[in-house]
Amino acid sequence: MGDRRAKDALWEQFAAVGKALASPKRLELLDLLAQGERSVDGLARAAGLGVTSCSAHLQTLRHAGLVRTRRAGTTVFYSLAGDDVATLLAQVRAVAAAHRAETQRARLAYLGGDDGVEQVSREELLARANAGGVVVLDVRPTEEYEAGHIPGAVSVPVETLAARLAELPSEVAVVAYCRGAYCVLAHDAVRLLRARGVAAGRLADGMVEWRLAGLPVATGTT
Image (cartoon, rainbow, N blue to C red; front, side, top):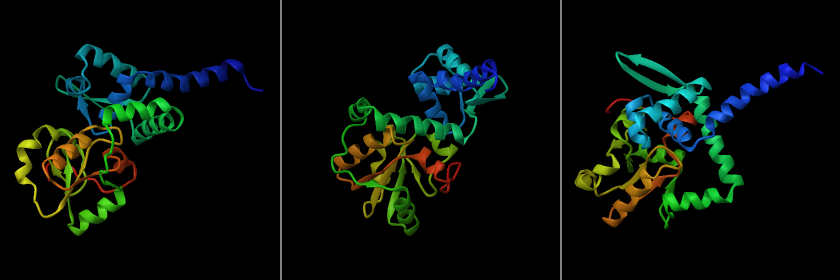
């Protein structure tokens, strides 16, 4: 039958991962790190946390084995421990969406409705981008774009989009994307573009799902 204490100790290891995930802010930090490596200061700003609070959350994630660190001089950078952590985060969200009615209500309150906006699948976007029939717009912060983006995508962070509309060609449609299925940036970008008369759709999910699907990813500024 096995040793009860040994079994309890084993399940305690699994529970440590669950405990680390039991915080909205820690889930948000994992979502940000799924875009690429980041410093503590950068994560704190992006998550709306103080540096001390952010560091405490990151230590919890590190002790659970979900993130790792790299030091460059006096700066500590965090990254996910592996793609399986991003997969775990995606599964947590999928289970919540499938089994908690409140999840859909919260999603609509945050992201807004789709209002007839075209939602383009990953496969269709790749085909259209390869054929040159669409402008692929990455509306995440520049550092996330540089860490990894859809090949051929143009970086226009959403906060700069209104001032840069003239840079977009008028003869082809635009498809915007951001971090993932629960990221508001692409939703905001598409609403702005459509209000200005630009034919715009949205990738049905985002960069995390693109990576996990094994699709090509470019890095740097081009």
